[in-house]
Length: 330
Image (cartoon, rainbow, N blue to C red; front, side):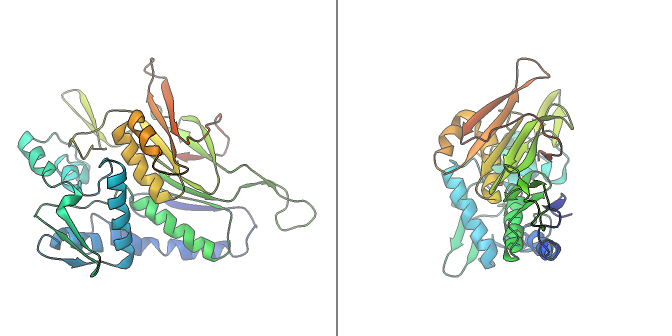
């Protein structure tokens, strides 16, 4: 377990002798990655940045530096819908401690004044981060699992393993190669029957444990964002934990969005961005990437029947598959 969820790696039975060694080497990366990215570890690398960068430049590792540049690029390409600088908003709404609350207008205005990459100085020569004012909080929660999944997958591939499924908390999934359906993998007597990909179940946000269907995923990544599990009620109104960093308020466009992209980090970040923007804007944003698509789940005419909206290079959703690995919502 790491980053608030359970990471799992699935291999085809007996296909690779080195699969166990590859998996063990991969999971060893989780602790240092969490220490680097965690919002809740004050002595970790991100924790030190949040605590010290308002007082001067803070040196960062090459790995975190690359992730910060990636996040800034996504902020620009998504018209600021994806924004890791919105930690102050997450705090003021109480979601950082899973104690949701309605902030006062003064609290909200102060938090919104601490959001945006224009407050962040990245020194590319010295690889340092500095904040231009106090109160800035970076939060990698909307991309951290995806980034970790990519790193673990790269480690597995170093061992020559080309067919596997990897997910972090089931909200961020990466598939390589194919699942073997039948046949003997090691014997020459019968060739293995390869599936079209690894079947990933798409959860129905209206019913815990229910599925809308499944996606066959191969050499791609998938992430789902939604508010089915993290929300609170105030005076009868529901407030989910996904915030629009541009307005400061929780998003109400849809029930969930599932994104398919080349990397897990892209899928993770874009699922949050698309949840914020809604389907129409997401359609335009998809044109900025190759091989990116999404499926939105929105409330249908019936309270118990959601509707699907596909944008970009959206994956094909088939009928629910037996044995499909469920994709949950953050």
